[in-house]
Image (cartoon, rainbow, N blue to C red; front, side, top):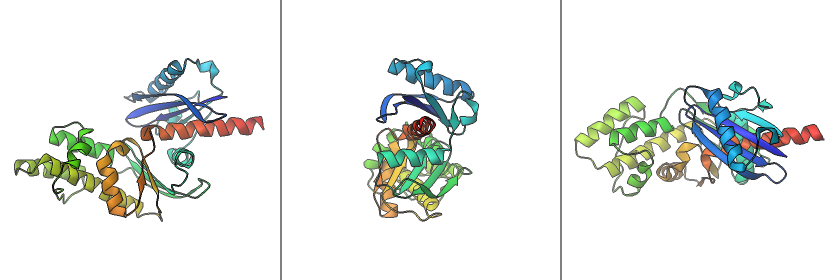
Length: 263
């Protein structure tokens, strides 16, 4: 029984092909979403199938998630990102009781119980602070790739203090710090700390507990992970391939649905 999970996000589309009997991941793919989410969703599934040496007809079910989930009519069902992340983290990091999904444009915090059931959640989709977009803009201001921010932050002597977490104002502040001769390493560490501050503020909207699982593209930034651990005083765990967990959760939902139909 093969299922596909497709996560059509605002910036990237992800697909996971799953052997449902043992939850084995056979293939994955990731592509920019661009301005055609339906095309991106179909293309990323096609690439994952090609990697696995499979055809579309080999799939028992496909489940779509992400902001563009309704654009994929061939999906058996659509499931929210919150439900998919909770399902994935319960399988990947069963000890986690809080899920932090920090994507390119928004961020979510989800409280789950021992069974992986959602207890509460909060969403920030109105401000870029703390998201991948915030770090992208700041990296551009520092004239480095966003992937280099973590490396720079690790070399900091003293993290720079940023008074604003608003993306627009923080960018101006970074430019001012550079003009004043501040080291890029210190600014990068300050940016990671500012992201952690914004994320922690979102977490405070619900009753969260450790351990915390950090997923989404920002989870690749170790500087943010460590700054967040310091900020909340708890363990933050990053699973393998944290940008694919939502698609993985969608594939697991697909397996659950097929199993329910059979039984």
